[in-house]
Image (cartoon, rainbow, N blue to C red; front, side, top):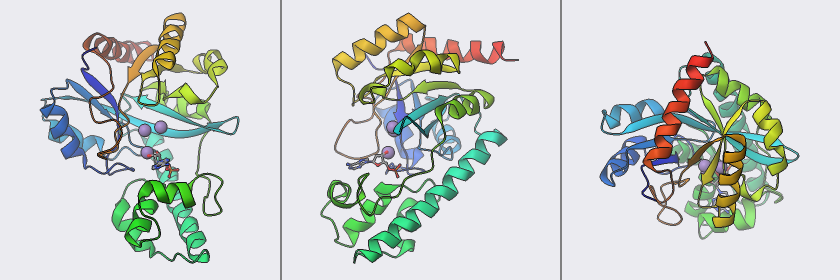
Length: 277
Ligand code: AMP
Ligand code: MN
Ligand code: MN
Ligand code: MN
C-alpha cells in the first residue's frame, strides 16, 4: 500500500520533539499528500502547521483526547475539528491545567524520593503545550537520574510506580460529543491492545465514526480484525505512525492510509458537516 497520508503525528505542542514546521517540511520531502497533527489534549500546532504547509500539503486538524472507561486508557482522535471552537478550547484549557498540576505532583514525588528537579527545567522542555511524562523523563536524563527516557519510564514513571500520578481524562462519550460539537469526526485510536472491542456498537451509537486500523502497535491480525469491523459497521478507516520525532520507533510516513482511503475520509468530512446543519 502506498501511503498518501499519515494521520497520527505529535509535535512539541505535546510530547513530540519536532516543531510543527519541521514535521510539515519532512512530510512534504517524503511526498505525502496529507498529514494530521494529533497532539495529546492540545491543538496549538494546527495553525503553525497550516501556515508552514502553504498549500503544498493538506493539513487535517486533529487532536488525540485522553479518555478512560472500565479503568482503561482510551485515546480518541478527533479529525477536522474547528480549532477555534470555544467548547473544545475550554476543555483543552482544563487538560492543560490538570497536566500542569499533575506534573508538579510528580516533581514533588521525585523530590521526596531523593531526585529533586526544578520545575522550570521541565517547563523549558515542554514549552507551552501539554506537559506529559516524556518531558519529566527527559529532565530526569539531564539530571542523570535515568540513563534514557525509556529507563526513566521503566523505573519511575510507569503506571503503578510511587512517582506516578493519574492524568485528567474524560469519558469517551464526552469526547465523541465534544468532537462532534467542534465539527469533527471521532476515531478510536489504536484499540488493538485494550480488549474492549465489545464496546464498538455502544460507541458507534454514541457518535464514534471511525477506527484507527493502521498503527505501529497493531500487527496484521489487529489490522484484519479492525478492517472487518470497519466494513461491518461502516466505519471510516484511518492510520498513522504515532510519530513523536524520535529516531527509534515508527517514522513519519511508515503507517497511514492510501489515496483512496484519504478520499473517503475527506468525503466523510463533507457529509458529516452537511448532515449536521
Ligand atoms: P502522559 O500522557 O503524560 O501519561 O504520557 C504518556 C506518553 O508517554 C505516551 O503518549 C507516550 O508518548 C510516552 N510513553 C509511554 N510509555 C513510554 C515508555 N515506556 N517509554 C517512553 N515513552 C513512553
Ligand atoms: Mn505520546
Ligand atoms: Mn495514543
Ligand atoms: Mn499518539
